[in-house]
Length: 176
Image 1: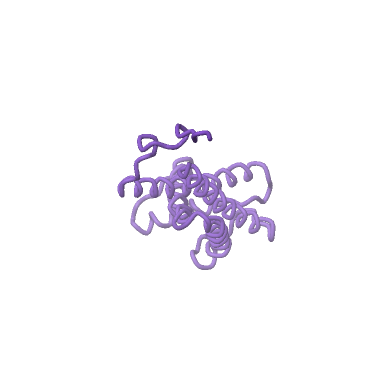
Image 2 (image 1 turned 90 degrees about the horizontal axis):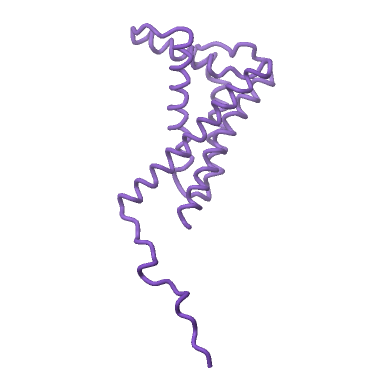
């Protein structure tokens, strides 16, 4: 009769210490922040790359510039112009989209893809439908139906799915 090899069993010193409440909160916020940033960067990179290559591509940044200018004028603040307006708009887009797409990481990772797709689709439909009639921001320059609205919605769906992928990857990495 052979004796079992007990050296392969984990010893208490080999086991990771349980996470404290503060560590768990920090991990959750990092997951939310990184997921949101992934979604925001995806939308921005798609928009900035494709608009330079494809005629009648979405011009999300133009709508953002109009929104920023009108908001600042409402507050009696002179809005920036030219390249400065473009930079401030990109920063605002990245911040607001990061917060929005961070919602994908709230909840269980099993539902992240559904949340990402749903939030992305909602943002895409909103970006297509809301600017002209409800927000008074006008149409996207060079918009051609249905190509431009479909691409606009696709950018946001891609952002939601990117946020979901990061949230799920973050969870799978933290479990190992």
